[in-house]
Length: 435
Length: 69
Image (cartoon, rainbow over the protein chains, first blue to last red):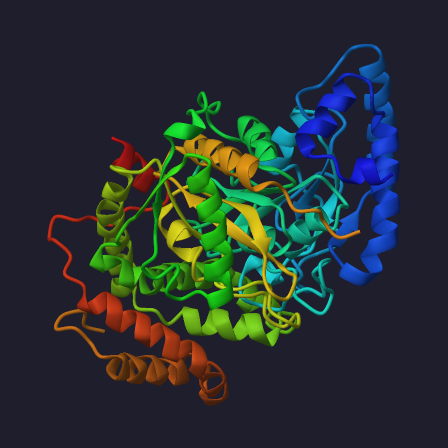
């Protein structure tokens, strides 16, 4: 049982393909784990036991006869409850959503099913994946702490060893933050890399479907299924050049985070990775304001009909946000879009000397309590710019909670980010997840 | 609301809070004060930026196409 729960997505897929592992045993084992841990961590909004077991039985027979649907044949995956999936409700942690509504598969879910994945269920989310009501989800490393958000359940389901991989989303920091807080790997790909059809939006210009998984190798496997192109040949690790963003990213992080990430970078340097500090352009200081105006305006526009029809069932927190955000003047929204463009132009030269940039994923580990899902400030810049970003665990904070190393690449070079994450993970190792 | 000359956070906040009362009413406007503060700060930052005349706003996927081309 323990062995099954510790398998990465890639190892699980290869063991099923080679018939060392039966998909029925996989699904049964993960459902037992969910039964055991779910009452304490609340990662799942919906688990489709009967369909998952039926799919597993069908795929077990297919595997026995040598037929594999794809590279994820028989591998269970969790889906953030803002993506539609056939036969499952989409509730987005909001009472305004109709639990009886019937949906077709979202683009991401359809691609996963085509690759042979078993959609195990829907993972909890902050209300509409925004800044509304957080779910009751708790961190498996310490249930007194948040599991992060807004992809709360996706992070906790993987970190809690209930599923080897899950799909999240990121508009600010919602995918990589829960990955880092739960001690696992995550990828926010380049903007537009993964399909957004069938995804409830927060902000069309900033939303990124993302990956949370046990290992950096899993990010590679899943990106090859969901991404626009296959990942490129890996660079030789000894030739990696990592630029360290000390401005802002280290300056605004807790001393303990700086120390833990610093030790990880020293280990990478010791393994041959070339490391050099890289200054940020002055315009970078405007990134949070630009992001705020874009995200606010688009969120208010999307939720305008819902505010009109369902104000009585919408949480006051979400309603207040949407009302306030509707007041951003149009000229300021357009000015923010123009500013994003010049900020991107100012940031691209950072990659002239470095393959990727590295920094902490979050300024501190998961905060105590579940009212806040944590600080997204180190993640928002890359959501704004659409640059691909990954996180891998890089150590434990003084309080025993995981911290992440964030790796960022130029737009469209998801392959580079994933291969850098794989190279770094081989040096730093993976964390042993909570029992 | 003007963009240039640049607005201060206080000016932006006054504009937003007056509009909040008009659009959503007194009670809602009071409730949304923290959000209006954060929006007005963001407006002041963006208002102060010098953006070249030829820069057009890009939406969604357009921005990736522009950078990659």
